[in-house]
Length: 180
Image (cartoon, rainbow, N blue to C red; front, top):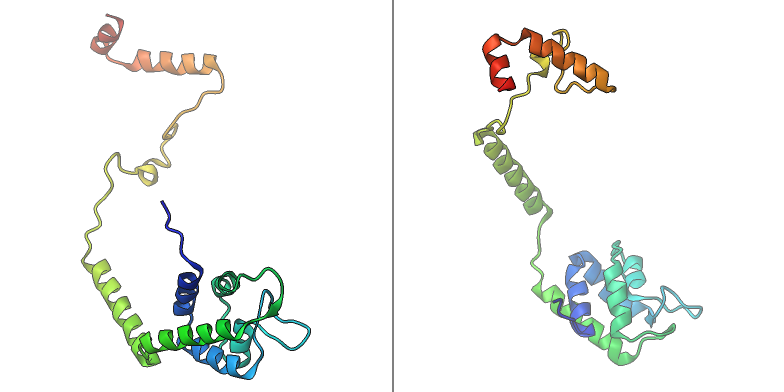
């Protein structure tokens, strides 16, 4: 059974999923812009926190943040966010930034290179065993007259003729075994 998250926990999780740069840009944008709930923009210059982040260089689109923000603020219509809502958002962003570990792009590139080396080494040392069952002989038998994996018959009389041809070529001992 899926556990229901509260609105504050859902917002904290959505904030945690944001990249570091988007979090800092959102904090800057919250200081510079009036923040709204329930929409992307309003007619009075108010913006949602994601647009505020976008305007400050945080080029991330995360729909789960927008849903969590609107759920947290209980947005049923477009309105200005209350001072308490904005302060709580700032606190959550600051706490998430404190938890972030600054990752240098070189570290990420090194991690990717290490991963690729490990995958290549695993591929080189893995023994590829054939799958159980009959081996594929299609290349070997392709040019042999009348060969096929299956021999479909469109009519019953063609099937009977093929079975009769097989019975004629079978040794006498096998015919006796089949008839008895």
